[in-house]
Image (cartoon, rainbow, N blue to C red; front, side):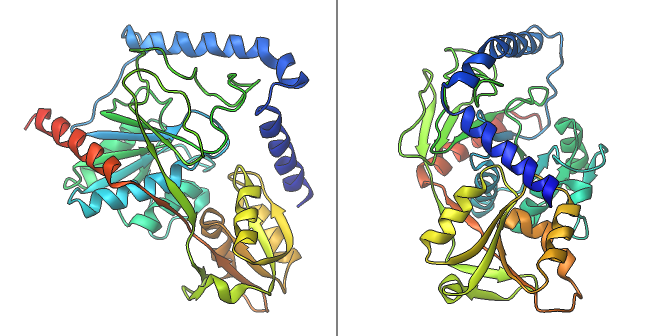
Length: 356
């Protein structure tokens, strides 16, 4: 656990550094200018046709972050897919599958592991029950998905704002309470690309979604919507049993979060009145060994974790003897109806232009 603890601590320290314009960020600022130039050069390669943009035969929606460090894109992707299903669309999801061991294009099946396909794709499939495929090249994953599921009529790309080789018909950028951080690009700041984008900039997100108190600055023509997110009122254990979250109060819980900003999850649990005897932060996309060591070191604990952790933790508890118990609490994102109306209108326009 020591190595995982060290990685999680370094991750938290860097995120804190990149959120303000302190001495360390200022020292890294010249490197951010180089990064900006490389992003501009790469963007121009696609605009000029030197790099190829690949189109799929169905509309494509991209959901992603402009800032690093977990702004809530995966819960937003899940909520969007569920909303599309409710409107009569038949969505599928493609993702890179960050953190997986392989690189091949593959389906996220019911028996897949996070090590094989990535923790977020596994979570998306479990939460939405739609086809999910992973691949380094999302266009390849999309073609494979459509070949296996020809009834799918819209593709949602999870975490693909900077993956410009996949043609998109609508792009949604998710921001949280940090906004754009200190306003600088990596590695001096949180930004993966300049923000706000210049008017008419290629591949700029069409829609901005934010969960903080203040919306980030916008470019001309961008549409902004405010999201609501929070923990749902019940927890689930590895056996599928559900329990009201209130019944876990006054129990000494060991809280676990292997996400970019674990403190946000811990504070949400405390706000619900839960008693946390220990808070364990793992690195984002931590591997299975970190969870196996945690189970071994806490044989009698009652754990509570994020859904992203549960897809890696719960399989380790199957058939295990002992008193260790584990719960997961989903994070729910509520999308405003006006956003769904906007997305549906764009999809209808796009679908009407698709060749028969």
